[in-house]
Length: 284
Image 1 (cartoon, rainbow, N blue to C red):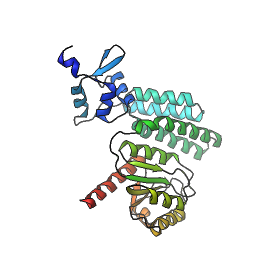
Image 2 (cartoon, helix red, strand yellow):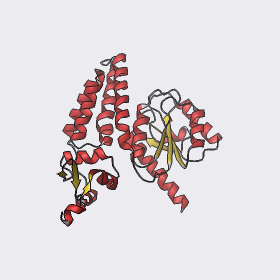
Image 3 (tube, rainbow, N blue to C red):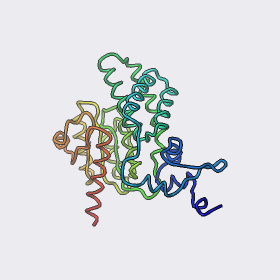
Image 4 (cartoon, rainbow, N blue to C red):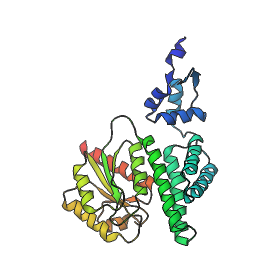
């Protein structure tokens, strides 16, 4: 064995160095994004190729047509209540070089949006919408572990849907994206009472923010009550509200929130990043 062969590393070690899940590195190999050689039953890679992956600049991703086609297929499988078919669509997207976060943001979220629009205009029945939601929950359950990150965790975000808002999927998606960014995300789910937000915030270790999501219109009164309860209970970290039912930053401030976390999952993670930056500045 020459020196170059001795320097090669396993996919598990590559995953550790890249701070990603083992299956993510395996997909890199399968799709040609990461050169690898097979030695018996084990794949090995050159650390120099990892350095090239970490270099500035975008990695190749699946095209927009692949994503839109995948989302349309996912809608059809979800409305049919076909969990196996929906998961096959997700696996195909992952094999086409999409990351789990891309599956959420570019496939699952658009699919949920289209199904919701279909329910609103009468082209998707209530039963089909409930079946699609159940399939989405199972997809999130299967993808969730892939967002776990090794190493030291950042500070904690408590999040959940406003009292009376029965949509827990957006919070679950945001929570996984926060975990991918090394935050500790305590997801309380749908229809969270004000007292539960307060209890979780008080018990959280190294709390950085509380996020309250509102995707159902008409929850302003309960949102205000939750924010008041958090403040009255001694919670001093930023309280962020967002989601499709919050129009803009001015709307968030009228509710008593410190900041608007935006209308979608990407902006919610960005709001957490900003809160982390502010907290880091205060500690200096």
